[in-house]
Length: 442
Image (cartoon, rainbow, N blue to C red; front, top):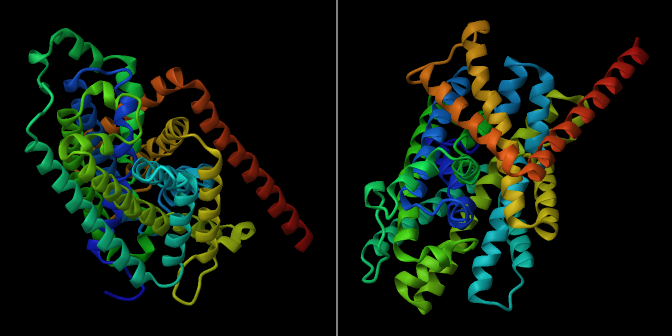
C-alpha cells in the first residue's frame, strides 16, 4: 500500500469502525421506552440495516462517478447546487463528525465510570480524543494501521460477546416471533406506530457511518471500485452484528434493567459473566469505542479539507502537513468535540445529530436521480443494484423517520434546522464578501 493511499481493507475498516460504536451500545435503552415487543425491537434493527444498505448502494454509484473526498458536500455541490453542498459541508465540519465523536467519548467515559466510579467520565473522554487526534495528525500509513488493528479487535470482541450470550445458563424468556408474544397484535401495532419511526432515528444514528469511506475518496486506492465495495461489505457486516448483538442484550438482561440506560452493554455483560468479569467486559467495550472515535477523527477532517480547497475564505482548512494530513481541520474538529463533551447531555444530542445527518443523506440519495437524469456525463464503473427501487426504499423510510422525529422531538429537530440555517447565513455572508473582493479587483 502506498504511504499516501488507503487500501480496500482499510476502507472497509473505516466503514465498520464508524458504524459500530455509541449507537449500538447505548440506544437500546431509549428504544425500550416506546417499544416493549422483542419482535418490534429486532425488526427495528433489521429495517435500520436495510436503510443503511440501500444508502450504501446508492452512495456507491455517486462515489464511483465522482471519486473525490468530501462525501455529501462534494456530491450535493455538483448535482444540486453549491449552496446545498455548503450546507452539508457546514454540518459535517461543525457537528457532523464532532458530535458523534463526542457521543462515543461520553459513552466510553460512562462505561469506565461504571467500573471505576472515581474517574471523571468527561475528563476521560476528552483525554482519549486528544490522544487519538495526535495519532492521526502525522502519518497516513500509521493512522491506517492503528485503525485496522482496533477495528479487528472490535469485531472479535463483539463476536465473543455474542457467542458468550448464547451460552448463558439463565436467559430471559423472550421470543422474536410475534405469534409467541403475550399480546401478538401489540407487536404488529408497534411496527406501524409513530414510536417505531421515532425509534428509527436512534437506530439510524447507530448505523450512521455506512458512508464513511466516501468522505476520504481521494485517499483510497482505486476509489471508483473500492469505495462502492467497502460501503456495501462494511454495512452488511455491521447489520448482521447489530441484529445479533441487540438480541443478546434482550436475551441476557431484563427489559426493565435496560430501559432508559446508556450502558446497556455493561448491564448485559454483568448478566452473562457475573460482576467481576462483567466489569472487565465493560472496560473492553470502552476500549472498543476507541476505534469509533479514531475512525471519525480519521475521516471527518477530509470534508473540511475539501471545502477549504474549494472556498478561498476557508482555505485555512485545507492546510496539510508534509505527509498530506489536514492537520488544521483535524485540530478544529477535535476542539469542537471537547467543547461538546464538557457541555452536552447524551440522549438529546443523539436525536439532534441523527435528525440533522438524516436530512443530508436523504438529499444525497435523491441527487442520484438527478445524476441519472440530468448529469449523464458523470458515469462511474459501479451502478446501484436494483435501481430505482433501492434509493426509493431509502428515501421513503428515511423521510418517514424524519417526519415523525419532527413531531416527537420538536426541540431537537428545531436545533438541527437551526444549525442548517446558520450555515445558510454563513454561506451568503461569504458569498457577498467574495463578490465585493472581485469588484475591488476590477
